[in-house]
Length: 214
Image (cartoon, rainbow, N blue to C red):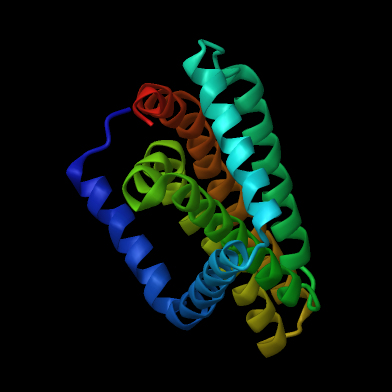
């Protein structure tokens, strides 16, 4: 099926309206993600020497393995990535569907930000700003351009569900909002699947190409 410019414009208009309608929630979850990233960077920078050495050893062993011709198992990587995205979507859908689950949703966002900051800081600490940044760009940037907005959208959907239920506690409204949250989560999961394929078949190839230059 051909996607016409008119359809593209309609999809873009819907996306812009969604962001505008939930701008405050997006600002909140984006701020929490940023805080998590900063904490991850600070954590790595405060590690004792022996822990920093362990990170360096792990990364250098990985790159040495690739340089020696040991191929990355794309099938296993794809399976792991899809499984992780299924768990993330189900978890954020479930806790986002409960009144008390919003702090958990925000905690997940902060934790993923922490992991990202930790990873970025680790590769830069090992290879310096230039090579470390290129390592991140090749191995993680592309899938995260999809993954991070999707995760934020799942968090915002949960917040929107909570706010809607607090405004209108009628049974009919609760059912409708949970249904909306469920359909939205399914759509977001499809985009997360795309990020898994990008991670496996594009980022991996870029990384394999770049590693010999480290």
